Length: 199
Image (tube, rainbow, N blue to C red; front, side):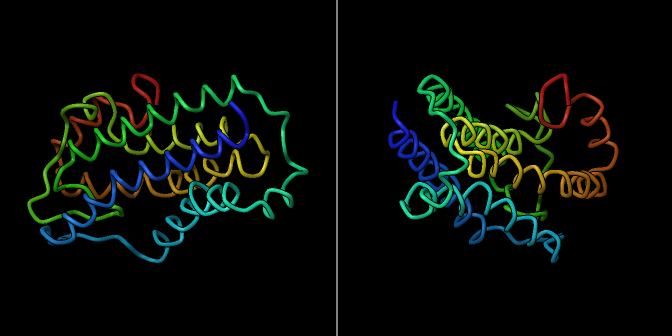
């Protein structure tokens, strides 16, 4: 494993993310009417912050030699073993990401929205945690940290997505409680948010 190969692996992971998400996004926009939306200015800013940390900055870093030179001051001594661990973590993130999309089906939305006929999904990976897609994004951020061994670019994904998570998850859970009432309360009592048995 070399820094160049680690960057290629990261870009392949981003491509994999798009290959999973884009078909679901196209299908849901075509077939499912939105009944409840909290896609306000705060939500749009949070999505941009997350996209910058997990996408814009690391992709630019991988593709631009000029940016890598500018950020060279923050480079860490490259560890092939750490980067190899990053490959495994990214593979796990994509597997979980795919599972969440398949299990959510027509209930999936990129932002805080409820679709027509929205149902409470509690099977599959949703038996373990209430927000496995957030878990997948945190794993992506961890993989980025391990693959792109630079003090600016590496942690940017965890910081960007962590910001979105901190300000969004409470709003999302209130929205779900309003929609599903006692059924959601019972689900909350049985599950953790993103780490089974922990948080």
